[in-house]
Image 1 (cartoon, rainbow over the protein chains, first blue to last red):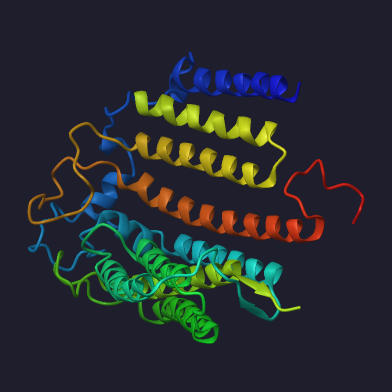
Image 2 (image 1 turned 135 degrees about the horizontal axis):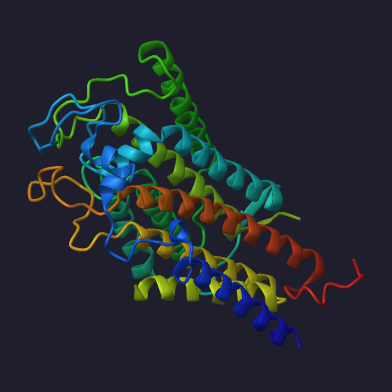
Length: 251
Length: 113
């Protein structure tokens, strides 16, 4: 009975969604046909030309200099430059959820045994891979303004490397105090950079450093700094969540 | 076009799971399926035919090229992170419930506690 009612409800919702998006008589509600988007109709064109505050012409890789947001990766320039305040809120949400997990599962905790006893090769092979994964994670968030990726994926990779150590070793336990310290320092530095920008750039989280040449490693002003902070924060936060789940409370 | 239909179908599968399942873990999985469908749909809105990835490189070296829309990518990145947080919190709640009632089934969580 429950299933029948659910199917009916789901079909109703489906008809509403499909009808509104694809078969509506109201032209303003309809989407552009898939793949036939004119970016000039959208705000994104301003982001691509980096001309939100006024035209700057064509942006060329390794040539254009001193743009309003000097990141070669447009997604990064939106996340950490144009919509940085949004990202600050997002990081706060992640912090609150990590805090909530720690609060719910909290207390003094000890390591929970894995389902199997890891052998010598697994234990030491995991340590070898751990180093490479951390290096890759750091590469990812320090090159967030040039290549795909950035603070959030880089932090997740670091957290995954910690999870690997937990899985491959029954005794391993991350140092929670240093993780919490990293998280707190990185989060506060993000806010401090924002406040510094009020003094130096005129508004909260403004890009107050020179943006350099597009495509250089040291370009984009505060973007690489903020993304490194986000990477450290996300990595330590997710590691903390993982630690909460693989440990159990001491009775 | 096909990918948008598939994304909406994924969303509907997620809604069905949320409505019909009474197991907490299954409900969390449904929530995640719903979220993935939504994310795929938002990404598909920004697709431009023959557009390149919105990153300037030594090959795609000018902003006058045809890029796909970077704004949905940025929004979905936010949504994914929020999704991770929600899932972690939901799993922590589920584990707390399991500790108290000894089951993940909502129907079996009777008045014994």
